Image (cartoon, rainbow, N blue to C red; front, top):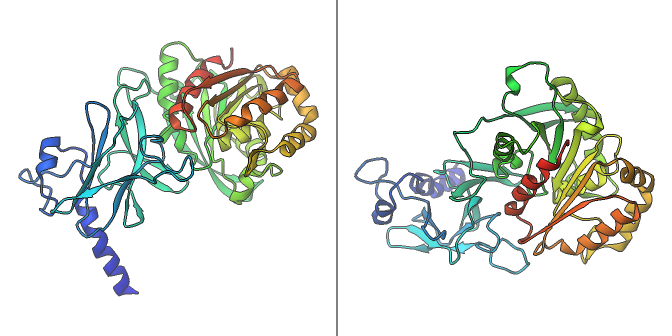
Amino acid sequence: MRGRKTKQFSRLLPILLCAGAATAHPAQAQNASCQKPWFTPQAPPVQSVEVLPDGRVTFRLCAPQAHDVLATSSDAGEVIPMGFPVGTPQGLALTRDDTGLWSGTTAKPFKPGPYRYAFRVDGVRTADPYAQAFSRTRYGIEAVLEVPGSQFQAWDASLPHGAVASVDYWSASLKAKRRAHVYTPPGYEKGGSQRYPVLYLVHGAGDNDESWTGIGHANQILDRLIAAGKVKPMIVVMPDGHTPDAARAIDFHAHDFGDDLTRDLIPLIDRTYRSTPTADARAMAGLSMGGSHAIREGLTRPGTFHWIGIFSMGVGIGSQTGVDPKRIEEYATENAAALKQAGRDMHLVYFAMGREDFLYASVKPTREVFDRFGIAHVYHESEGGHTWMNWRDYLADFAPRLFK
């Protein structure tokens, strides 16, 4: 066993030592020899990710012993396809030079914004060890690259910034330790008596409670909107959307997440933070699986939330054929009383979907359910698909509508 571990480590060592840092000059990076020692002015490190002037991206990795290397991204969509639709390539194939340096450039430009990426080396997914920023997902860690030009760039030193805290708590409902991330707006930490409305913002199935800040830049979006006077300062709580039994997190009949949210997390926030503990000052929104949580655990609780946002998700999702009419009717029947009450009490139901989203077929039946129960709603249809590019835009469109 010890010999096997040593062999595996020796195989990974050239990757860990040679994968390029993101600080080298492009010309130096391209001329550097992959197998020379780094860390000296005479032998600068390879630049692992380079955004070209036209928006295309070059990826590089020093892995002399590798046989097959790809650059992959869970965010790049049409640039580096990741399985949507089924059958598309699983990454950008890199080419090896005679020094062991692998490189490749995307055929299409990336749109401005942040993207997660990783390398797949001989079938093993590997985070770029020299990246300067990382994002944790449900399935591990990916590095983050920034394509300049987005209105949601990672940092703007000219703005007042809020704070993001990681909060651990015990869930009596789930009998498990849980974690949430909490954004407090600029000025909150100075203290005082001011109380704030709260938005509960949930991630998707492939992410975790850190994703809305790690790759979604929710805190930067709120900072900008608050500074511009477009958003009322608010607390944003980003819960863990996965319950201990992962299969039940997206089970229509399971309410594990909702129980933890309403019985444990919301009371904790109202005890710990200067929140306004009323439905009029409480919102819930989510993307994909988080949108399902908003449909099942938010919209059906009009006594808890008066503001709901549903991003890239609809009623009846779950069957292999897409929208399941049986699930739609079950949802409507089981929640009829609550949905009628929501039609009377909700201040806002916001529903957003991209025209290329693989869940787009759920738009029509979802809006029909809203109409059936008299739930007035704002529908926002965009270009693009099931991507963070859209979800950041949806949050920026949704947040200014809250707590008016």
